[in-house]
Image (tube, helix red, strand yellow):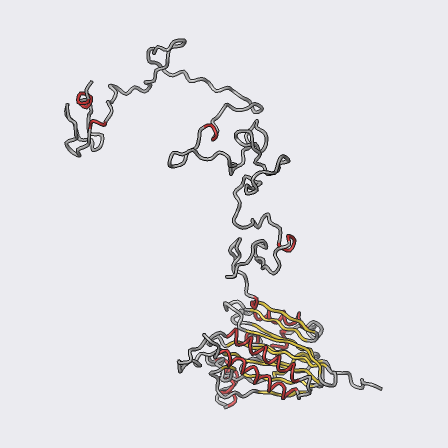
Amino acid sequence: MSQSHQQASLPGCPSCEEPLESGDLFCGGCGYDLSAVPVPPADRPTVAITVPAQGTGAPSAAGPVEWPRASTTDSSEVSAPTHRPADLPGVDSGGRPLPTTGRAAVRFDEPGSPEGAAPDGTGDLSGDSSGDSSGDSSEGSSGDFELAAPDPRTVEHAAAGGSAAGAKVCVACRSGHVDTDGYCENCGHAQPRERDHMEQELGAVAAVSDRGLRHHRNEDAFAVSCTALPDGSPAVVAIVCDGVSSASRPDEASAAAASAANESLLESLPRGAHPQQAMHEAILAASEAVNALAQEPGQALEHDQHRHQNAPACTLVGAIMAGGLLIVGWVGDSRVYWVPEDRSQPPARLTEDDSWAAQMVAAGLMNEAEAYADERAHAITGWLGADAYELEPHTASFKPDRAGLVVVCTDGLWNYAESAAEMAAAVPSDSCERPLHGAQVLVGHALDGGGHDNVTVALLPFAVPARGAGSA
């Protein structure tokens, strides 16, 4: 039968279903080439498959296919044969055979086959092989895909596994290493900054600093230390600094100021300088350290006449206990409170803020309640920094006649315990014996109150010798 005769029986174009006429070689509607269309069958029976006659190769009359029945099994027998992936050769998109030497990445546990056997029965995929282990070391011992980083559910903590010396371990999964960008290479968890929460206890002084609940970093800093006077008596130092958030690099400013003031005191007190004069010099040293930050290369353009307008800045408050004296010094609005060990005695605030509210009260323009209720109350009028006004360090000397606790803190704490009575109520009764615990409780008090700012507090228990005590 010729091609043209075959096309006569087509009811319509296979492409656009345009009606066809006998002898058409192309569709009149879409131009489809009808010579490539196979001849349709005369009819479309439901079953049109024929099978060879039994015992001969000649075709027999058409009839339904007699499919063999699958063997029946119970729960203890092997199921009917099925095709396996290895029964057909694999090829890639170019038709080339796939390599068959590598192990499969899945585990085969088919009924009736040895546990952990490969589809061809020649390989062990269970990873627990007692045979020859001299094969290619690049092949994993397990059929599972390996993760790019260890699975935190199966890898032991670095403390037990002995991680590389100096390598940081993720605080979340405890198995991945921390990259230089501060994220875990395994779970991607961002690691907390070192300054987000700091604690230190040194003899008779302790301090705690926390980022708080609203700030993205901790811009506070502290330094605590102990030294000896020329006569051998002890001297205890606590410095607390609060970075000015509206300035650039406030965290660097507070850290530089606390470190410089502490080093200055550790140098001047042992050589016999009076503690109050030593505190004054320490504040000046802290100011110079913060001023130097504005002049660091790459931080301020020398040709910019306004380069000091947003220089790094911070406040400072400190306390020294030496020779039976309590010396305090400050610039800014961080404070020092005195809480007597005998709570029946009144507490006191030992510093005056360099702030707008304090100026209004001192000038008699507002009472304290009105001034601190104003939105300008916490605008500071004194700070350390290259763009500060003329620096005027404040120092004061006290000689307590009774035992008590010295509380040195930033406004992140006293915002939630502003008056001396409120601060004394927040201080635990055993803080003189457990200063670190007391500082932790005070930081918790600020966080429970809202934690709107960074919180830093240092506690110095002040002991007074009992009357009549001394050498014979």
